[in-house]
Image 1 (tube, helix red, strand yellow):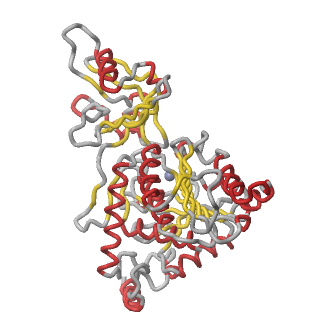
Image 2 (cartoon, helix red, strand yellow; image 1 turned 180 degrees about the vertical axis):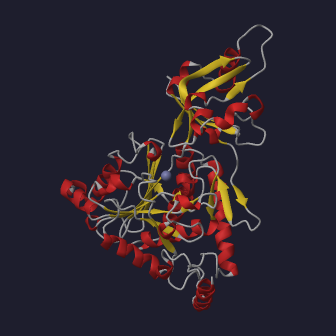
Image 3 (cartoon, protein in one colour; image 1 turned 135 degrees about the vertical axis):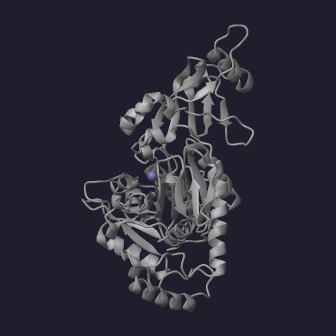
Length: 484
Ligand SMILES: [Zn+2]
């Protein structure tokens, strides 16, 4: 404890020394000194009043965005809205590749890239930051409607790694799209507005389940049980409840039971993002894995002008289910995008070897939040390598061949330290934890890739918890990487 006090004193002094800049926050004497040092100071310490204001203002915008971007589909819509307001234009085959030009490219409504052209030749490589925009949730099966007892319900499946029981007895919103045979799309968004109804997966109460304490969590409720109640008032003319729901869907949205076969309808927590704690230093919100990183990624590329290397923010779908499908990171979309940029630049001189060189010389940060040390069970981490909320971005060093090459880690450390961005590392307890990211899909393409994260509590639950100062510092880290 005495060592802790001593260290803070030094940090305070350095805070005074660099407090003149508005962007460079007075955080730590040297971020590197703090790495893995359990006596190291929190990034909250030494924030000037104006720094703290900036951190909180960023948090307000983040919460507002998160309440609209509840799925990969709505993330793309909201991100493109922001990008357009910041001068990004749709990428076309004839778009000029002049330094400073800003483009967006949407992949099938479920993934999006934001691009700012740099001064360097494409074949010197790009600076890419990738993050995913899908989050764990439930989704409707494609023949979802059924009745049981006095209720109508939806059959569901799940997306991502979940502790099933955590998703019962909370308000759920139904969002997504229904595609009809005539080529039209119906957008569905029920439950996020105050006056909307919500849906609940109603778990059995303790009164009627006295033996529940002897059951394991997995026995309490199974994935096949996770069906929300959607209707309850019987009809006087003996129409079944599911017929009534079908009629409601037809009248309100013009869709039939058959149309639900070609639909992507998700059940997501309807709780809005909120400040947490007396001091309001934390944010509780649904979908912070990984829309926290994705939001900072978008904000960071919006705030650059003319970078040296062309900057690409790649926001991708389906990470939670293994990077699959043509909108996931395993898709050829990314290399096709680079090929399109090269073709727009070289015209008839386009050649494949140039594209390959551009990809191979690219450097990437793959960002995905990760669990931070949780006061409920701090022993889930081995403390010397565990990431702490409020202590900055974390470099994921999972070992066993998954680390970035050490020279690339050193390059990243330098970028962060040069700008006084606090960082730490994260290495799971050996053999006791794990998790995937999109990073591997890009190192496979011969790029330099490092996995970044931000420690968040309760990821993959309906309501995760992040530290406002980490969100802002992740934005700064992304921004400085794009600027290089
Ligand atoms: Zn994730």
